[in-house]
Length: 471
Ligand code: SF4
Image: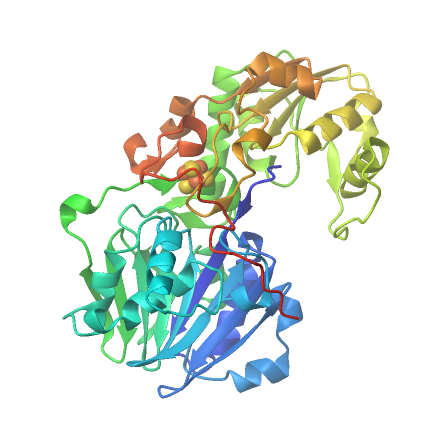
C-alpha cells in the first residue's frame, strides 16, 4: 500500500439530458484518484454553472445542487493536490470569464513550467485567483496575441510543458486534450447517438453505461459538439513521444479500468507472475496487503503454486485517526485500518505481496503486526522496482529524502522493515508486463530518467507566496 497519491480524476459528458447527474456518478467512480475536493460545471449551451467543495463527492453534492446543474453537458473533477495547497480556491473545475466568453477546465497532471509562466504574467500585471497550475492555461488563452491565432488552444498547449489530461468546457462544447507524452490517461466513450464521454479511467464509463471507444491520443485535441466528435493535433508528429505513467498500472488506477488501452487487473496479475519468477521464496502461503497488493499477490500465487490466503482484514470505516504520534499509537492506528487474521499467519512462512513502498513507515508497522501474530518467516515481495525519485508529473510522492529507497540498498531496506527477505520486481520485468513497448512508458520515479526536463527546485507549493486561506 503506497503512500503516493494521485493528482486527480476528470470526467466529461456531452449530449445527455441528465449530464450533471451522470457526471456526478462518473467522478464518484473516480474518487480513488483524489479525495480532497470535487466539482462539477455544466452548461445549457449558453451559460456555465459550477458547484465545487472540499471533501468527498458524496458529501459535496445533493439533489438540490444537481438539480441546479441539470444541463445537457457537464465536466467534473476529483482532486488530490499536487500543485497548490488543498484549499477551496484551488478546487476544480476552474471557471473563468475572458474576452471570448466563459470557460471551465478540469485538469489531471502537473504543468512543470507553470511557476515560470505565472511569474512572467504577474510581472505584466496579471492577477491569479488560485495557486494551482491549471489557471495558467486560462491566462495563456486570454492573452490578446493568442486569442487572434487560427487555433488559440493548439497554440497555448504548445506553450505548456509537463503532464496534462484536460477536459475544457465552453458554453456550447466540450474539448479534451492530452500532452504529447500522454503521461496521464484520458479515454473516450460513447453512450448512444450524439452522446460522448471522456474520463481519466474507463471504470467511470462502466458506471454510467458508456462504451469505451479509444484513448485521446498524446498531442490530440478532441472536440465534442453538435457535429459529433472531431479531432486534430496540436503538435507535430515528431513531438509525440509516449511516456505513459507506469505507476497508473502498478498502483493508482481501478482494477476494472482500461488504462492506456490495457486492463489494470490483468496487468497486475502479470506483474505478480513476473515477480514470482524473478523473486521466488520458500514459503507456505502468499498474502497481500489490501487492497492494492491483491492482484499481484494472486499472480504470484498462480505462478509459484503457493496457496493465496487472506492475511489481513481492512476496515473501510476508519478515516483519519487523530492520535498521539508515538510508535505504539501508530501501530494501533495501522491495526485499526488493517487487522491481521492470526489463524492464517501463525507458525507459517509467508510471502507478503504489495504494489510499492514509498516512505516505508506503514509497511514496517504491517510487518511488525505479522510478527506479533506469529509469522515464522516474512518474505516481502514488491511488484515494482524501488521508488527512488520524486514525480513531477502529477503524483504526490514525498521529497527524495523521505523516499525509503532513495539512498538505501535493498539489504538496508530489508533490515529497516525487519523482514526475512525482500525482493523487488526489476524495471525490465515490470515493463515486460505492459502491452505497449517499454519505451512508451515513464518510469522516472524508479530510474530518474524524466521525459520532460524538470527543475528539482519546483515543488507542490511553487505557485504560492503567502498562503491565502479562505474559509
Ligand atoms: Fe508515473 Fe513515476 Fe513517471 Fe510520475 S515519475 S509519471 S509516478 S512513472
